[in-house]
Length: 369
Image (cartoon, rainbow, N blue to C red; front, top):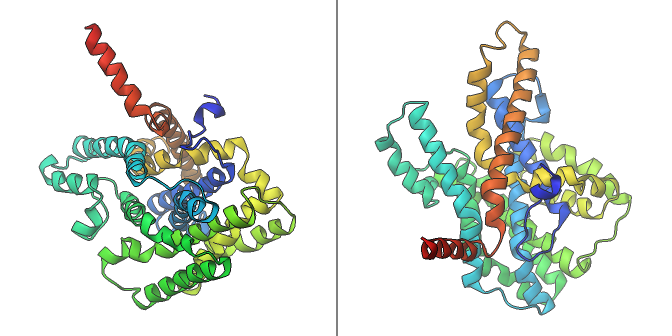
């Protein structure tokens, strides 16, 4: 399977490799964090390297803020055509819904066939998950696919983007960025005051909005300061070296207020550094990052499946060797399943006109029968 075949299809035809490279870091941290927490609860085999891997979710939020904010910023700040809202929402549906719906159906079938869960008991959770309402309705992560709660947060952001993007109507760069920065800090401060808040709030955009706004700030810089062609300098590699470690090593309470800005710093450095820019734009890295949606949908279910089927094979091995071999099995399974699903399901849905082409094929087949 060639790397070219695995590269994502972009809506506007413009490929920003740095973003897919950053997606790779985000998905890798989440995958390793979930696997380590499941396979070695309380263990320190990987230690601090994965202790805060869940922050990969926040890294994804920043990317979403950048990607979705960019066309609105281009309209308000560069005079480009307005974003048609009907096309905007239709694109979200045709791009994301088919892989998501099919994944939920597969996960539901696995719960029934392997774990013996009653389909009748799962049906309300499946319906809520299909409507991106499980966290709001049940106050907990999806029973069908636990990681889907973050996708519900993403959908809430998608709906708010046209409204939030009006910040780009502020013509003064200094004022516009000050407003975004103030909103980021106020959101973080409010969340620290409500740290033990209700689950429904913590599983919603109320506890994530500042990361999306950090993506807006990145879009602002990319469009107005860099003119979509960021210059590179070695000094930004130093920024990466300094800022990436605390992003994953520092505790939540100590770093929560500044976490979105820290992520903004490493993202800017990914665009503007020399060495790190090379790493984040390497074809192998961007190919894996481009599959992050599929990997995210399936990586959690594959943990228990792999562990169940390798436990007997590795019986008697030492803990570290046991975990290391299981990790290799797991990563291989994730790569194989995700690669196949990406090529067959997700990547075709990236083409903007896939519904029209599919309907054309169905019509021609019906006419010829």
